Amino acid sequence: MPAHVTPIPVDADAATAFLRSGRLAVIGASDARDSFGRSIYEALRAQGVEVVAVHPRGGTVAGDVCHPSLLDVPGQLDGAIVMVSAPASVDVVRQVAARGIPRIWLFKGVGGPGAASPEAIAVAEELGLEVVPGACPLMFLEPVGLVHRFHRLVRRTRGHVASSSG
Image 1: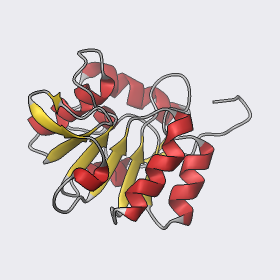
Image 2: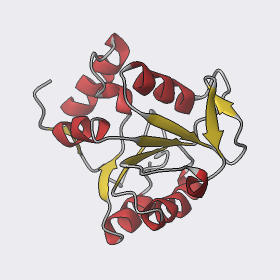
Image 3: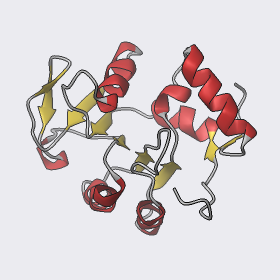
C-alpha cells in the first residue's frame, strides 16, 4: 500500500464477531501447502467454524470439496473471507454481494494491500456489505498464536487495529 494511503483500522470486536457469524466462505483457498488461504481455512475449521473453500480451479482444500465459484456453494453463507490479489478483489466483492452474503473480510497480510485495496473497500461499502477492511483473521481467532498476537500488537500500536478486549 502506498505510504500516502492510511489503512482503515480493523475493529477487533467486529473482527471477532465476524469469525463467529456462521457459515463462512474462504475465497482463494487452494490445496497448495504454502497457500495462506488454506492455512486460514484449516484454522477456522479446527475452531469449529463451518467453512467452505472457493477457488476457480475447484478440487479440494485439506480434503474438503473446493467450489469453483460462490454460485456453486449450496446453502446460505453468512460471510466471505477474500484471499485474492488486489486486482481481482473488486470483482469478488461484487460476486459476494450478488450472492447475498452480508459480510466480507478483505484480507491484508504483511506487505501490499492484498484483497483490501481502497477500491474493493469502497465497492463493498457502496454495496452495503459489512466490511472487515484488512488484517489477517488469525490475529483474532482465539487462541491467537504467538506470531499473530505479536502482529496484532504491532498493528494496534500503529493504529491499524481499534478497540478490543484482547
